[in-house]
Length: 73
Image 1 (cartoon, one colour):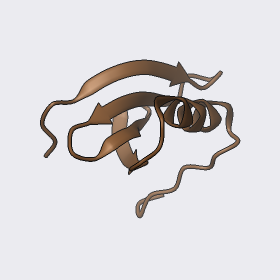
Image 2: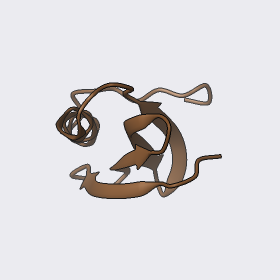
Image 3: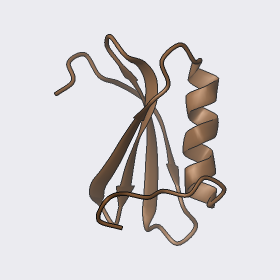
């Protein structure tokens, strides 16, 4: 569980199946939270990286440059 979450921006895929949100996670730093078909599937943390780095990662997920994989597919 994370405390002190702050959401900055949200990116969507063209077909609307993927949503990538940019967050600041206390004690961890910036990262992204990814949803597929409105179900949360993944958090990625980029400790020591900037807000812009996390925004680029989220945008890359939404446009399909950065593939998203989970244990369940």
